[in-house]
Length: 230
Ligand SMILES: [Mg+2]
Image (cartoon, rainbow, N blue to C red; front, side, top):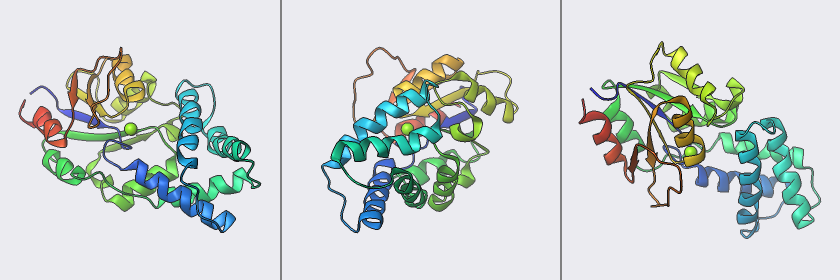
């Protein structure tokens, strides 16, 4: 048996983060400004948010800072007069309600359920991720859930992998597979921790200089990788 345990990333791997994010942004915008969210703002927001998340994943800024700073920068870019703190709290409230699954996610977890041990390892905000796991109905599949905000350390830092291993009583990295869509956090994190990695790459992106052990484009390939090798 090659793998007895899978660590799953959530956003972009099992949960549809893009949909949750777009809905939360437009709902918060409508609530605060009684106006619809101009669609051309989304790419600008992504640019700002990506830079801040990279800093957070490097441990350079806190998650609390990131939550408000991204909207402060967005409002400043568009000369929008509004309170970024108020917007952030509205946004997170709506985001927590967005438990959308990527198509096929439940079937994948069902096929693995009982066959191997499953845990979730996510960089995100505690209340938001817990709520989305519960609303989406997939929380029940995971024996343990490690959220960067709760643990005080984020992927790709190997410490969050070690925390999760310890909680599951796993003393060796052997037999564990980390599955996720992010090269910089999931795959680099697995490499840092000495855990085998499976890059979920449905979009056919270029891996650059990070080399995962496996690359998969579909849930079916992930299931075959975990179950057929037993
Ligand atoms: Mg992800």
